[in-house]
Image 1: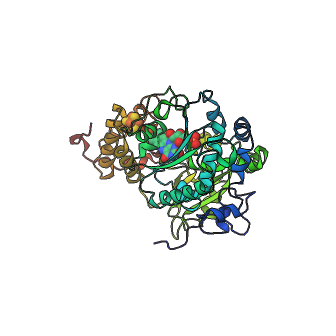
Image 2: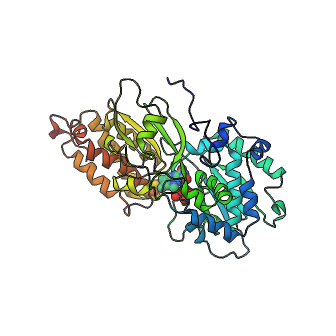
Image 3: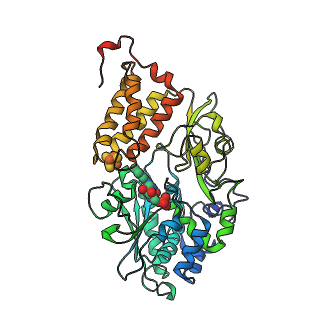
Amino acid sequence: MNTQPIPIYGDAATANAETKPLTWRLSRASHVLDIDLYESLEGYTGMKKALGMTPAAVQGVVKDATLKGRGGAGFPAGIKWSLLPPIDGGPRYLICNADEMEPGTFKDRLLMEKLPHQLIEGMIATGFAIGATAGYIFIRGEYVQAAKNLNAAIEQARAKGYIGQNILGSGYNFELYVHTGAGRYICGEETALINSLEGRRANPRTKPPFPQVAGAWGRPTIVNNVETLTNVPNIVLRGAEWYKGLAQGKSPDPGTKIFGASGKVKFPGLWELPFGTTAREVIEHHAGGMQEGLTLKCWLPGGASTDFLMPEHLDLPMDADTIMKAGSRLGTCLLMVVDQTQNMVSLVRNLEEFFARESCGWCTPCRDGLPWTVKLLQALEHGQGHPDDIDRLTQLTKDLWIGKTFCAHAPGAMEPLQSALKYFRSEFEAGIAPVASTITHA
Ligand SMILES: Cc1cc2nc3c(=O)[nH]c(=O)nc-3n(C[C@H](O)[C@H](O)[C@H](O)COP(=O)(O)O)c2cc1C
Ligand code: SF4
């Protein structure tokens, strides 16, 4: 077992608010749970500055900064906010997506457990910018400590007058609640999340209407990821140009990102690094390289629902465009590292079992196609595959692709499978039974 402490903030000596805006405070204290400590470390200054601006000006600076969503799809936050209809005097909501159940992804947990005030500050500033009357942090039920820390921090913020009526005399009213989910991956899909929040079954909703127009309880709603929202006060405080300048090299994605590595590296962990950092730097420098005796076989760039990349992709800058051109997606930027001892059929079967179990069952291709995928992979894993099984799996990657299913869950599930078939076909072929004519899995 790896007993090394998880290095969560990189180089403590040089971490500062200018270069590592999301995690620098963790180089001063291991947790920042107390509001006075948080405020002594520049806490709530971005929110206070926002409250002294107009909502349109706050939206403007975030739009100029081209802050991209950190929940996996990378949609620009400022553009999403601008799609809200004009304020009509009725309620409108800000929802923080803290469901984080993507295998290999654990960045939001860090931000909520250790820096709950940072998220709360981001939600108040964002709520003000979009005219939200209430905010909900929809958090994965298993994140017990994070929910506890957030609830305690909300009470501290309320006592200081940062939550509630007429915040700091600004005239802005904002309530904030923590809502724990029951631990379903599909609750991370924003419209399924809204259904769950309303007490309904967590199925995705038809879009349009988009949540910006008709979201929670039919009212205008913005859903943003934890990491997205924690960026907002820093952008307000230091400006769009500073934020854009944080990225490395020619990265078209601005700012820093919480990168991570899991798998058999020496030091699995999380590090705040500029967009444009290479996977090689993450794996070899920050994560200490592969464990003794192991070599890198392939890697997933951003959680289980992205395509595998190979060692030859290690030197590519990690930005959305570059990783897409290489045949994958940036996703959450939490790298899952695969070593040469791991069998790809078993590994993909394991991932597909997760996706099959987490299918909400609403549409047929996903509900039936994912268990069938698992069945075919199990047969190949045990050397009992039919010669047609690889073609069947290939067909499934097409039948469960974008546009064929109701939401992005099934297409996401197909990404590791299609790329494993592309790069490691021989491992699938090795699972075909020698006397296959008697075996059928159709
Ligand atoms: C199956 C599925 C699971 C998802 N899980 C999450 C999640 O856990 N956290 C998250 O922020 N976004 C998740 N998303 C993306 C959300 O639907 C949405 O795009 C995101 O919360 C928007 O926030 P952002 O623009 O700040 O990234 C998921 C999407 C799908 C299809
Ligand atoms: S793709 Fe899967 S998770 Fe999404 S609606 Fe269809 S059954 Fe549900």
